[in-house]
Length: 203
Ligand code: ADP
Ligand code: 5GP
Figure (cartoon, rainbow, N blue to C red):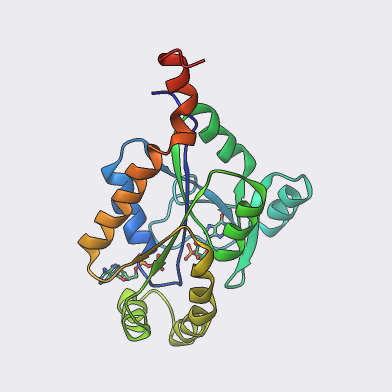
């Protein structure tokens, strides 16, 4: 059934497991794509330009901001990140569903500007487990980890205005919950009504 693509906006405090969950869900659903953001941060080992992010300079980023090319953008942990309007337009026109792994500031901007997005917040089971996961990932220094833990309380408070909260305690259960949200949202009346009206001549 033809319809516009759904935007799933997913936020979480760093270390909650958002990246791992997003990868899993994209592997499960062929109609889902990861929205590739622009960033001024340096690529990490293994990250690919155009697949994980578009890695650009601060000058290029500023130029895109000035030209109004971003649907949202924010400074996160000292680097700039943004989602281009063109990426969202392609999703709308082609009917492909997009997962936007973005921070709370960006999610709020999209909520104010666009209708129909699905806002999902991923929570860790506890602060202790969040710290354990950040340590276990071993990609950040102790100082960076402490800063991320300090930021978590404020971020978690923002979960109240999201449409769904998923606690990533047991990974397989969190995946099941995320799958359920994706499936249910595709059936929302306002997304399919136009096609149903045409198909069944509902006038
Ligand atoms: P985020 O993208 O939210 O910063 P990651 O997806 O990188 O977080 O996950 C942080 C770490 O926690 C990774 O090492 C990941 O393998 C691990 N992790 C993710 N989900 C779980 C889970 N449910 N139980 C235990 N460890 C997890
Ligand atoms: P990382 O550098 O670890 O890949 O991402 C750091 C943070 O930036 C994460 O919280 C991630 O969700 C956020 N982020 C990634 N892309 C975007 C984006 O396009 N816009 C906004 N606002 N945040 C983003």
